Every structure is written in structure tokens, then in C-alpha cells.
Length: 128
Image (cartoon, rainbow, N blue to C red; front, side, top):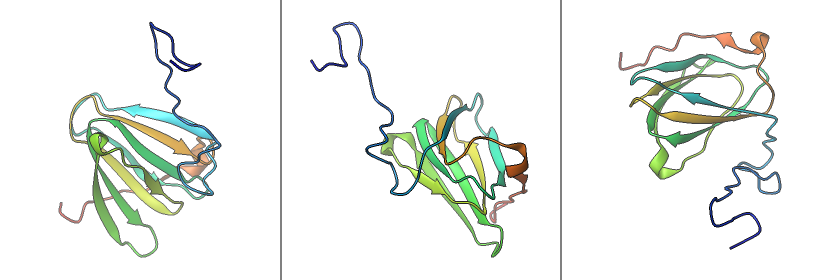
């Protein structure tokens, strides 16, 4: 048993600045989104300053990304069982849809939330 664990509990370190998820990505803000129902959607916006990392903690979700300049679009399925980390850079609109009730998404960001940096952008999936 190490210094962080005791017989009745276990401490799990989620982030240590000595071991960044992505080189050069400085985490300054973090939050989680709990999707209460299947097909709940978050996002439909982009940021001019804030970069984000998406980490699915529980369940599966569909992430649609669209470059606001080129209009190029990509849809990716994030499965928590695969432990992926998705980088969403500035200038890329994003929409996350829960594929099941109870899905949880952890978001790490390079800056805090600011209304002036959350620019509405309606993404319509190319398959819709």
C-alpha cells in the first residue's frame, strides 16, 4: 500500500502537472458534463481563446467537430472504455451528444469559462 491509499479508501490522482495529457497544453480550468438522458447535447459553439481536452469518464458519446473557416466536418465516437483524450483547438466548433443516459464527460481547458469566448455555432451533422 502506498502513501495515498488506506485500507478503507483509495486515492486516484486525475491529473499531475508533471505529466501533461498533451505537451504544451496547460490545464487552467476543468469541469464535467453529466448527460442525464440519451441524446442530450452540449456545445454547438466554438472558442477563440480556450482550447479543450475531452475525456469520456462514463459511457459513450458522439462528438461532431467543424472547422469554422473551411466548414470541414468530422464525427467521432468517444467510448469511455477505450480511455481516449480528444483535443479540441480554438476555432473548431464542437457538439457532444450522449449515446446513453448517465454519460459523463470530463473537460480540461486552457482558460476558464467566459461568455464572450463561447460563440454560438449551429452544427448540423452532414448525415442529418
